[in-house]
Length: 134
Image (cartoon, rainbow, N blue to C red; front, side, top):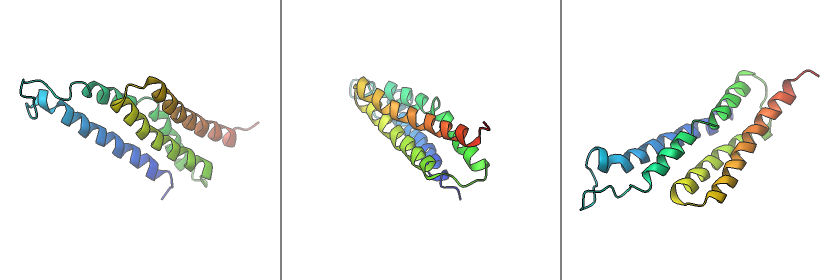
């Protein structure tokens, strides 16, 4: 089994957990479950943040998943740095979700996103360098 499958799988699990969290946050509106006494949704402030973060899980992360599939499909030993970068990305995505959903700290969110962005960019750069014929 490729060592990249675990971080890829865990990112997918993280997305599934975000879907579950979004379902719970929307339950008062959609099903009437968990409404406040006045009929409002007690999760009205967090629900749009969860939704936005879930959308973010399908933008830049797409390049992460493609890089991992490509590395696995090349059927060559995967460099340790690629595995490190994959884990950096996945841990960073979890941190990004926590910051985006539970805080309003845009600056911190940008820093965490930049770490994710650089990790995937580095993965692609290493793929290109390793496979480019000068």
